[in-house]
Length: 353
Image 1 (cartoon, rainbow, N blue to C red):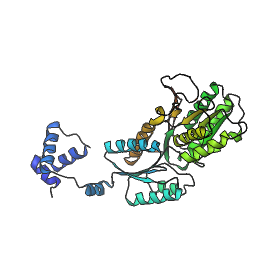
Image 2: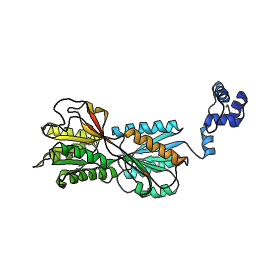
Image 3: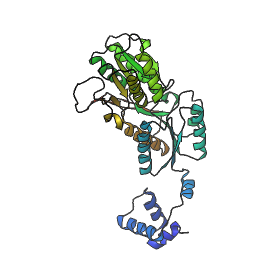
Image 4: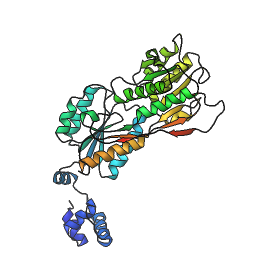
């Protein structure tokens, strides 16, 4: 087996120079670097990843635990995390919890046994009693899409309150006063934040909050359809629906069709989460678009900074601004128009909470 010493001898440089070229952690002149790379290629040298990991006390593996891998939101998130991890020399292991906190904790222990350097987590609903101990043991953890900064974990997500506020304000500006909402899975921060934004928008515009117009969904298509159908059967049904994730929005469209109603003529619809298929639906959906790729990229960068000691201190919460994408499903126009984006005010909050 070819060793690093063989490469050094072939390139007529020191072992330290070969190591510097391969790791990129020290400057090497272009001439010497080219000689080393030529020798690596000619000798078909393969660095011993296990030996390097033992020496550096790192595996260069990151863990990512998702809550629902069937949701298209998470495919883009995974793409961003993997792109960022690979560019920094890390590989990625995935787990899926199906929104089950017991399964989540089992995946955490499995990934720890695989010696991951750090963990990204889309937290399921429920208690996370294991998390403080995990952080105390020194494993860097970044929560994605849902915040656990209150438990001491870095968190990266969109500004859910601002996104919901803008969506509901848009409906109010179009003349709607009875606006139903289908919320996401009970017990997760994004659900609470989007409901807060809905309530704040009503209050700002002098509209009383009516709990009859609130239905708790499960963040999935069938749940969205069932809860939207309940709202549509009310004696004094809403004139507009705000549905707080992509899959439930599709379900709500099904419920509207099943009820024999037309969107937007009979009822307006706005969803939280944008996805590629929105331009295929008729009417084209007005949505709140999250910066999903940027969320994944920021989460991976933050985790790697923690692993490599480039960022220290208390947990931070990064909020990235969403955009309201105005199309046709709220009755904005009776003719086809190009979609337009309204950037919402976001924030980046850093510090323990």
